[in-house]
Length: 145
Image: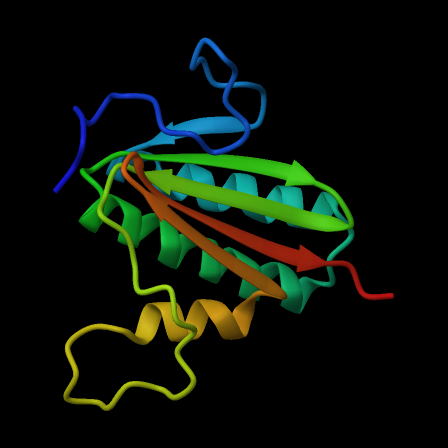
């Protein structure tokens, strides 16, 4: 269950002390998902990722954003940061995900669970934090050396 209204601020690390979005931070609802995919793709290219890595990372971020919208109250906050590649943080007001990294692909008859398995395989690093204010997923793609 959510701890606050869907428009309450969520900490993604890229949000100012007054809870206003900083540059490269967006509030996302279903109509904005395509725009976030385009922004992530462009940022990944700008970060110097190779084309296949750009595609894989974009799919992973899309999966996490969709999960945040479905299970986190219909609103996600997405922050994009450049470091040794690209770091994208997706935060929502939902109760959280299973923190264990899925080792095996869930069986075909299992209704859920493939998205997180896939995300861990498409990103160089995935960190999931959950607390009373919601869930934060940080996805990292590093440039090839």
